[in-house]
Length: 314
Ligand code: C5P
Image 1 (tube, protein in one colour):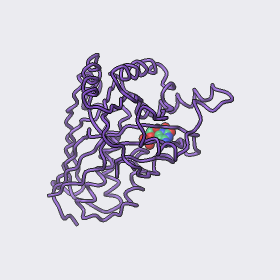
Image 2: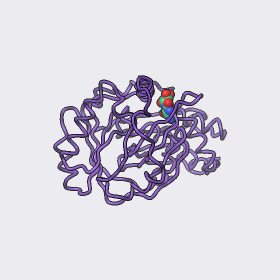
Image 3: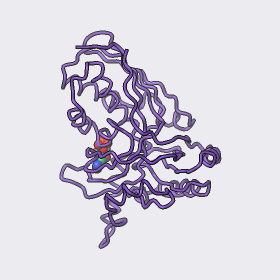
Image 4: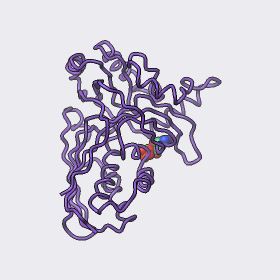
């Protein structure tokens, strides 16, 4: 049963303030633990029920500000069957019997291949939007299970905000949200492939003998507590940093530039290629964004988003 004809929803991106990668599991995925925080940089999705039963069209509009991004990722470069929005639609139809024809419009603002989780967020928002359109047939538990099936980062985006994330990515515990901070995103003009980054990390670890690479696991309680402290004292790290082969040098330069520009914490998001700086004052963040713009970098001044926006239905 369809109660509404149109549903619009924002799909925010995230950064990983901390990302610790554990052992490879029998299913080929790695256990991880991290602090994920969503940001006020979002794609927008609009779903309209129209057309033939079972049909689905997707119009993608790229509104990225970095010139290099559009050159690097032409619209036609994402195969339709790999698009997570289509996969989420198919899965939702399969599980609920929802058959309405759909015209989807996706306004893309989150750079692809950046470690900001744009595709995963689009998928989570698609599940939430379709559930709204269909009159909420599925409880959150069911949506979580479907989100995990679609991808490791998708469950986090069902709720957003700040969370301690573990397992393969499906265990999401909301944590107290850090207040009053500014974030500057810097994505160099190349992208990162997550599966390749995991492989490089495994290879780097195999080469290492003896000591756990690249450092000891920080206890969950300490990580959650640290989030409420001054970012200048955060013990957070990202295990992908340093295991990214040829790209490590470029990341190192960006993080150094962010610190020089006044960031009290700087890091890499996911497996890259987007880096971020955390600032206490807006003026310093604005200045840093200006200084680091250029050289083909995508840059964006933004802030943490306390919670996911609700769907808007008509
Ligand atoms: O789940 P997702 O499709 O985003 O994962 C992409 C790739 O990243 C996987 O195929 C796997 O190689 C790797 N991955 C992993 N462990 C995770 C998440 C992702 O090994 N927890």
